[in-house]
Amino acid sequence: MVLMGLLAVADPVAAHPSPNKELRALDERVEATPTDAELRLRRAELRVRMGHPRDALADLRVAARLLPDSPRVTLQRAQALAALGRDQAAERELDGLIATGPPLAAAFTERARLRHADGRLDLARADLDDAILIQPTPELVLERGRLDEQRERLDDAAAGYREGLERLGPAFVVQLALVDVEQRRDRPRKALEQLDAVLALDPDRADWILIRADILQQLGQPASAIVERLRALVEADAAVRRRPTPLHQVVLARVFLSLEDHTSARQVLDLALADAPKLPAALALRTQLDALSEAP
Image 1 (tube, rainbow, N blue to C red):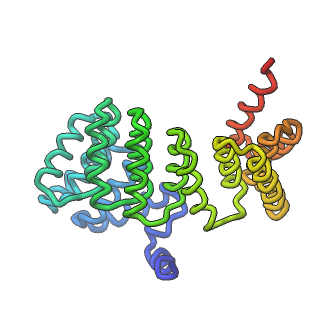
Image 2: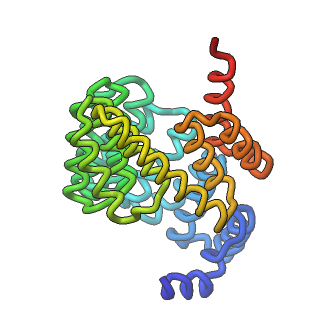
Image 3: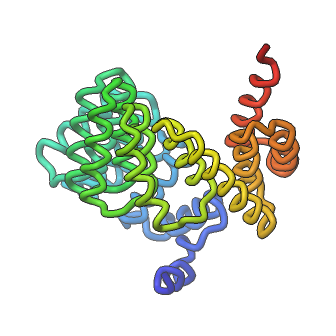
């Protein structure tokens, strides 16, 4: 981490406070050395991120002349075309790259997203399988799992999360996704086993303790579930006292809601929304509380 920090300070383009400033720095460097393919590629990537894919294609045309057989140029051209809405052209670029180039996780991932967008879910899933085989990341495993859930294939989602964990090792975001799927598959014991592995890493997380309470309720153990909710209340209250952040306040409000104390939940949630009025978790919880207050 220290080395990365030193590199960022040493490189005037890497140490950027804003995309606009980074783009200006790259513009100056490209103007000084217009045949530097690396600078062209970096600027093209930034232009796509900033919503200027046509400008990116101009850089990529130059980069293609300088590096005629570069897989990176082809990949970035596909990404720019996709950003322009030219999905079929983007997919043709990716098809050629995947057929003839080295195995690139990014190429399979990009094609999976194009296929997902037009409803070819099975083909998108196959591409994500290949991407994960080349370079597994928690983000890709989660993306594949969400796709399986969209396909209403919860068994595949659970198997995919487990396979991902075998390749990644402990990754709590994937473990929690597996917990959720096991609950929805009505496999509460498997969900509890997985959740306890997560809680072993951080036993004081109130939001995870709340999930444990829900699983115990699903297992037909309401008394144990109440004990866990009270434990979550202690931990959530302590977290808010240490650092009264909106996220901590939302968790405390959720605990109060789980204990059917709607008044306290609303009071704490109002504090969170006062500081973070657009926080998605807070807005979702407010919607839930509003629905409960309107129920007969």
